[in-house]
Every structure is written in C-alpha cells, then in structure tokens.
Image (cartoon, rainbow, N blue to C red; front, side, top):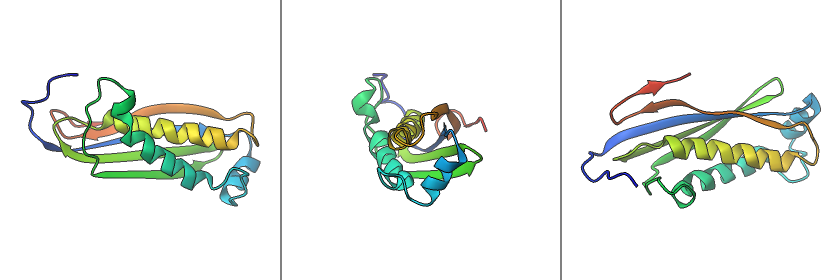
Length: 142
C-alpha cells in the first residue's frame, strides 16, 4: 500500500453513482409496491451497500482500512433507470472514493440479484465517481 504516514487528516467526502436499468415499467411498479419475491429491494440493497463499502479494504489490496464516519445511500427513479447515489465521509489521511464506488457497485449487484427472477433485461450502468472533497483536490464530475 502507498505510505500515508506523513499525510494529515482532513475531512473527506465522496459521492458515487450506479444506474440500474430495468426492462419494463412493470418491474418499477413491483419494486414500488414492495412485491418483489425476494423482499424489499431498496432496503436490502442499502444494507448490502453498507456492508460492501465497509469491506472495501478486505477485497481491494491497495485500499487502506479507514474509519467511515458517515455513509448514505439514496435512490431516484427516472423512467426505467434506478439511480443509486452513495455518499461516504471520513476524517482521515486518505480519501473514500473507492469505498463509495464499491458501495454503489454492491447496491447495483444486489438489485440485479433480487430482480433477475422477474426481469431478464436488467443492466448495470455508469458506476462512477460524481464528487470528492478533501485532501489535495476537490473534484465535481456531475
């Protein structure tokens, strides 16, 4: 791993996104009405996302273990797209961009897993970093 022992702690935030595209409006309706056979898609996917972002350093060898002091997962439905936004905050020596993107990825994969029995046309799109603050640079991609 990169040596961060000489870096200073700063407030760091990252916002990442994933888009889950479903195949029909019926799938969106089934999600909204909480009638998906595997359970509440939004609640289960949020829990999976929290687990994923917390386990990032266990799965990606160059990521430092760090304190996650806030994590938020929000959803927006736009037509057949479910837009997932994951926000992660810490006060530490290194950023939380990978944790946010990993969390968004896990949310999207969990949604895929829960919805595949009812919709064979699900796709995952645009896992990307939207914003980061703290450290040497602030970046806003959105």
